[in-house]
Amino acid sequence: MNKALLFGNVGQSPEIRHTASGVCVANFSLATNFLKKDGEKETTWHRMVAFGKTAELISNYVTKGSKILVEGRIQTRNYEAKDGSGKRYITEIVVQQLEFGDHGANKSQQPGSTALKQADDKGGIPSQPDPKDDVYLDDVPF
Image (cartoon, rainbow, N blue to C red; front, top):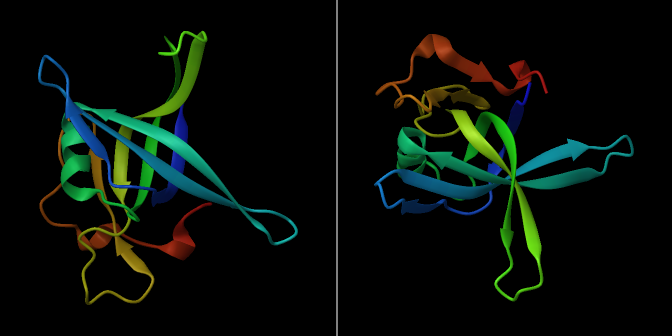
C-alpha cells in the first residue's frame, strides 16, 4: 500500500498550470512538524502535486500558510538535468484527498475549533461546512 497522510502548513501559494490537454496541475510545498523528545521542533518540507478538480480547488482556496490535511501517494520521478550532469530525482506526494483546516471557519466558533471542508480528486467541496463536522485540535490523532 502506498499512502501518505500529512497535516501541515502550506509553504507558498500554489503554482498553477494547465497541461496541453487542459488538465489543471497544482504544485506547492507543505511543512509538517515533529516534536522531538528533547522538546525541539523538527520541520520537514514535502513537495505536493495535484491534478484535475483537486488542483482547481487548491488554486481557489489554498494560500501560503493554509493549514491542510492531505491524503495521497508517494511518487518518485526522474528527469535529465539541463546542464547534462545526469539524472535528477524528485519525490513528491500526489494529492488524492484534501481537508481544509482554516478556510471557511465560522467566526462564532470557539477558539481553537476549525470547520474542515473535504475534497477529493473526483469533485469539489460542499458549499457550506456542516456544523457536525467541526473538529477540535485536541481531537486530531497526531
